[in-house]
Length: 283
Length: 296
Image 1: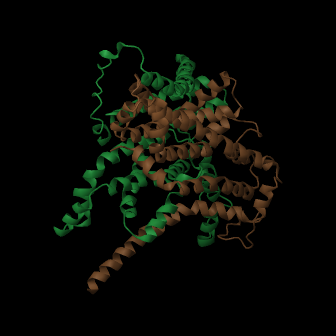
Image 2: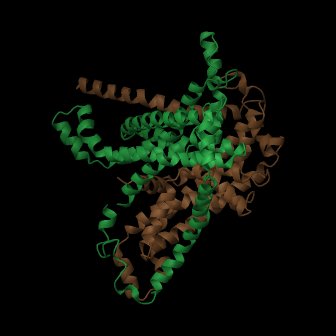
Image 3: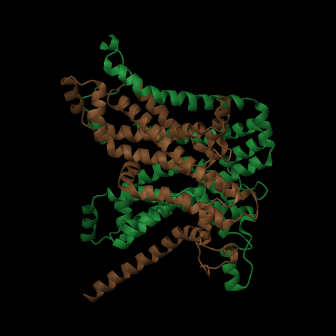
């Protein structure tokens, strides 16, 4: 009996021996980010593990836009929201329609389109950045938020279509046959049968595209250079232009920028984990 | 595979199928199919096909490649990229494999830890990587001030040493993407029937034997596929290097993903595109492998 509890205790100790380093490794940069954000001006760089007088003043400065790096904080936050929501919505629309056409209507050439989309998914996004930048220049879209929205839609749709097609293929074919026999039009099948059944996957895909667009940095700073049109992420990068920027303000803004995606991820976690990990790597 | 088996009612998708009775006029189902797939075809043509074609056209001059190969930064970048891939991916996937075994343990505190563990992946790169960059500041970063407090000696100038800086960029990459791959492997481990482990326990198998003869055989395909996919994505990892080192010191820590931007800044778009073309021999076989895997 006692050897059993001893063995149990040693298992728990071994698990803790893994768990504690994992927690420190994961949280240290995030803790450090928070530490800077609540440190008074100039004190974050003192190397202390907790500030003598933690303060929320940095957030007040950010909210009141009282620094020239933050002159457009609210506008840039709005830009980030707008671009993420638009990219999420358009991706959802384009991908759902395409997945329905390929999987349920079995449109001719659908398989080829699916393969082209998959191919696009596997091109590293950073490799497409420079040609995308030149292309947007040719289209006259540079510095328009449409450029970033459409670029994000381009990057997000292939994976979105693939996940939705996988989910759609699992719906029984009898559903379509029954609808056809009852004289349903393709649009009725789409609206009344397909959309309700696909809702969980659509939530996963919409959230995926939204987070992708919100978190994007490279495309955002390539395509949007004007302070008034750019996103919060790019505004954070602009702090790096000087060596003596107000780092605690940068980190306070960074924390505000990081919170919404974390919250959205946790809110939709049960859709995300099932929908995305199952789709990411089929074994 | 089960997904395809469900559709027994549909004709088997052979490449030679489109002949037959489909010569009649477009049914409303096919017409709607074309309408609904059109938005994506448009997106693909305008924002993938045209940019890729335009990019290849910009990279058409052999002289660009001569200039590229003469640039010592390019050679350094190729080496860096290979080091980044070989060390970064293997280290990351091995840790993910190990940690997936930890996270499948049913304990309330491990469940809570797994919620926190996902944070690096869920939050945007720029605040967290800049936070790491500040931690590594040689004068006031928390790491060197702690080293000074504990030992009285000055810590290394982390990001000013090319080898150290590249190694740290690899660590940043691992910090950011480890949660995702751990999650994938956790999903893989959860798919293994528990009875197999129970039966092995009855037979007195050790933990290592269970891993060797049950876990690994079930996971190895997923592990390989994940490694290949991770390789493609790591090739495109711009943020880990750019936000941590900016390619410096003296352009010694660039990878292919950041080098294209360097040439764009220098107003040498042809070199920028030539860089991408040079990466294709590495990317295309991986893409081919993944396409085979996913569309079989």
